[in-house]
Image 1 (cartoon, one colour):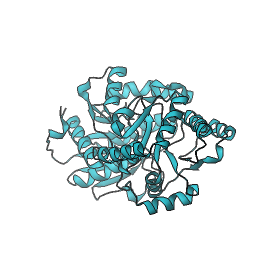
Image 2 (image 1 turned 180 degrees about the vertical axis):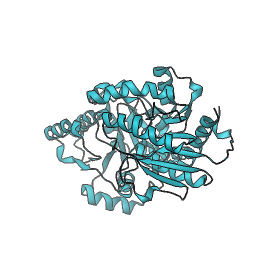
Image 3 (image 1 turned 60 degrees about the vertical axis):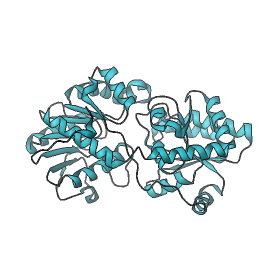
Image 4 (image 1 turned 90 degrees about the horizontal axis):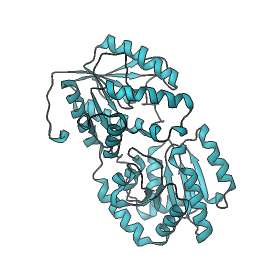
Length: 388
């Protein structure tokens, strides 16, 4: 079914939404997706009522229009036991009270105890492919609940053809039940004048060119191999390029910092920590020579399209959704092969014509990804779920 060609009209609906990841100044990944899609959806459909279920005190900036009603639901869902209590008891009771026509969950979690029709956005199944990267209790929770969530859902949405196929193959879900809605990119990301790029470099790298990584510092992001490859590249070339890493550290990140301390090029690798200002991230992206994002697994890879919109060359992995999203805007490498990653860095840094060609391809490909289209496709998926 082609969502873009489908037009559905409904009497006013009451739409409940899981908004627990709308946390001020801490939007990442799915939180960004939730924010960008919902603010468009509620404004485009003022005839419908939206009930936003938060698990902590909400910020009024996330109440995008008068047709949004915020509801605080306890406890804060930040642990598998609390996930269970929040979705299966507290939320189930709220859904019974408010009687929505449908429950939309942008992070994939549903309420198995509720009889309300439900639509889940499943971004990826990384826990199925790399279970050892997750704490035991989290892994058990995901493996138990997500197969049940996809069966419970009236309809599923996901962000790439790769993830659609993955869901279909791992959980035996008909492809006809899964809608690919894609992902978008913030308009903050754009090419910068050379003078501004030089000013950002002066601030962060004493004027030296750099490659850039942004994202949570999870083990599945493959930063260990990226650090090793960058160190090898520096030893082989003597280059003055630097490596900037923007992202929040977690308990699992400590081995990365230990590895960093052993590297010969450690002074040219800078952990910036979490950069909560999205404008600053956009400036760092556009001022870099390339996005260095050789993850082990991505259902989409939002930094890839942020780099595209910035007119930045991309070095990324050849696995999962990364080739599908990056297309001709990137050099693709095996994330498990440190030598191959180091060679690609050398190729990229020593060939300005290649970087320029990839950057030009990035800008062209960026037009494929926009939040308006994502919001429209998710709305169509929601309408189909209500109708079915």
